[in-house]
Amino acid sequence: MTKLPHFFLTLTIFSFIFYGCTTKSNEAYLPGYSGQVGELIVVCPKSLYESSLQKPIANTLEAPQYGLPQDEPLYKVIQVNPNSFNRVLNTHRNIFKVTVDDTVSKAGLIFKKNHYARGQMMVEVKALNSLEVIEIIEKNASGIVSLFDRAELNRLIARNKKQGQKEEEKKLLDRFGYGPVLQKDCEVRVNEQDFAWVRLMRERPVGGYQHQIDQNLIICETNYTNRTQFLDSILNSLRDSIFSKIPGPSEGSYITSDYEFVPPVFNEIELAGVFCKEARGLWKMENNFMGGPYICYTLVHPRRDKLVHLIGFVYAPQFDKREYLRELEAILKSISFN
Image (cartoon, rainbow, N blue to C red):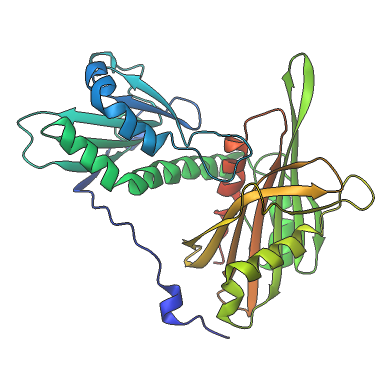
């Protein structure tokens, strides 16, 4: 099998350092986490938050998520005073805690898994003063967001393992030899040689009417020959070629990427233990008024000379789309080649 050169497999490592990590050993006796997906509690005195910390925290945790048609923050942040942080709130799924004390011996970050609740992620900043807190947050912004993102995805994957579509998963496993953990109500609509299309359709009421939520997954394999296929321009062409396989609602309509309003942004990540290129952006329907966000992963199959393309895209014109895209991301990132 053709191998990717060693330097091409080298991934960018976050430049942050956490000085500690703790996990409760009595996890089985903890309550389950609370709160909505994409919600995050900031435990910090209101006076400190409003005087100096609101902006750096917002710049990190409420920054607009790239690749959505309307601005949506990475997380919905709720500030809570420490004296209000009681048994009702301390089981929240995502907690960002700020401790400012002149007795702190070592300023830095510590993350705590399953501290007050099972499946909980808590990140705490400890510092002598607010200036140190700001410096720590700004220096470690990407790492902080990454921890909460990973925790949210793990919760969704765990949910899908309990409630998912085993029969539909088997169809993909039989076709490709691998497959994702599917969400409840996913349906394999097309399952052909080197190509599968999975659809999850729901409705929600808005303004007295039912409105459509359409989430889609694509698994596609193409031949892998050399590393130049990971160039952004090549991946754009490959993705549009794959998109065109999805039928549009009217004659002559087809899906393609939007390159004008929200150009695709690429990142190098690791997925299923191998190098992967991630792309985020918007799709649009040519010859029709439809569109929405997509996320795409491209990697080399570890045992075959095949590029594996994993695409998730959302159509939900009446709703915010951040969490619907996150659901697809969790499904795609559950892919395993074992």
